[in-house]
Amino acid sequence: MTTSHLLTGQIIYFSHGGGPLPLLGGSSHQLMVEFMKKLPSRLHRPEAILVISAHWEEAQATLLGARKPALFYDYYGFSAEAYTLEYPVAGNPALAEKVTSLLDHAGISAAIDHARGFDHGVFIPLTLMYPEADIPVQQLSLLKGLDPARHLALGRALRQLKQENILVIGSGFSFHNLQAFDRPGGDAPDPHNDAFQDWLIDTCTGEYSQLEREQRMVEWQEAPGARYCHPREEHLMPLHTCLAMAEGPATKIFDDYILGKRSVAFQW
Image (cartoon, rainbow, N blue to C red; front, side, top):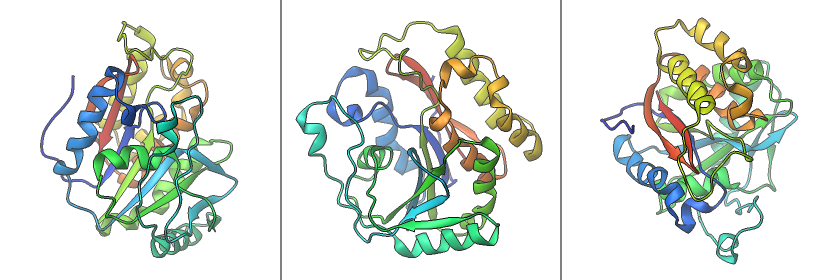
């Protein structure tokens, strides 16, 4: 089900897999790993990367201030190897200042955290995409409460970044029910999973006005299989921000199985 063709946009939402598993091997992430490794060849090489990760929530929109953020191993129960992974990439304080300025201009409270490091929603996919770690990276938090309208507003506030050579990544998971994952990757049929992934594809790629598209995302809980796929919606919120920032229809770039569940990725 994977789609493959030349892409030109610089905004992406994808499913980043289960913790460090994409870097530890195993068949349950094989298709995702192959997709991630090939993704840069379909993009213009960016001068900077901005990641909105599902694994950071703050009361106000927050960015990283460190010039060389450490890695934050925000997972547990894995082999020792998972806690020695390295991704020695530079931070991007200048981009943090630019983003906070754009957010402030839009009336959105913003802050900079000089102590926090990159979580696995950042360094796991980027290790696969850009293993040389030679493109400066910045991270933007989600907002506590996970209000879809507020995350759409974040994206609208950042539209000016599309004029620059910045790759914006929404790093989440279009299916994130921890109790339903199949770690060996059994890929069993799951109608509720399929129904929600199909709804996402229609919403993100279909012939809707931007206003209609955003309204559907505000009301995402009404979609078939929504709460089954997302008992808690932090892994969906990065999609809201990317969709609003893009201001147009997406292209589906991945539609296959991760941890035994169908997951999708989009690019604008």
